[in-house]
Length: 194
Image 1 (cartoon, rainbow, N blue to C red):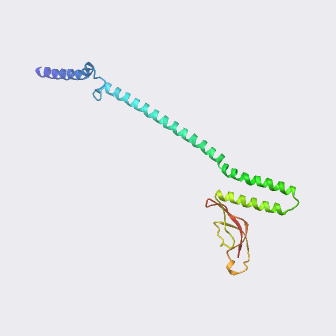
Image 2: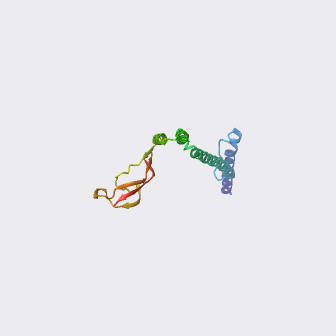
Image 3: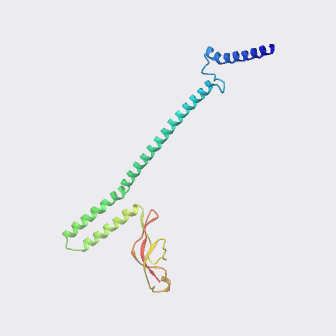
């Protein structure tokens, strides 16, 4: 019987001690600072609350990131559309004086009976147009008597070469090829000697 009383006394001491450990922080005002023992209902509830708070913060962060990325995509699309709409603005603006020159040449051709001033005016306009486009990065492809290169040239036909040196070389250019800032924008259409 004494043995049973000792066991009950030890259990009572442990319960009292555990109760004091749980209640003492509340008495001292340290309730928020000290976590309940692991495995207790209060500890699990506290952990659930912390996880729910962390989940809410992560969800908010995710929603903000998605919204920020969506805004970035919309802004990027608007900038791209604006760029495409205004890409040719500088080039066309620089070509307007050439268009004005053509208008003047047409009026001069209507007024004069002589063809020589009109022909001279057209040559001047051609040179001005060529220079303006050259300033924008347009460069003519050199083709006369050059070796045929399928990467740069498009062979329309082959004709017999007048001599062996001209075999495989360009005999005539039907349409000139052009580079824009060192990239081919139009392949030269040529006649090749065989």
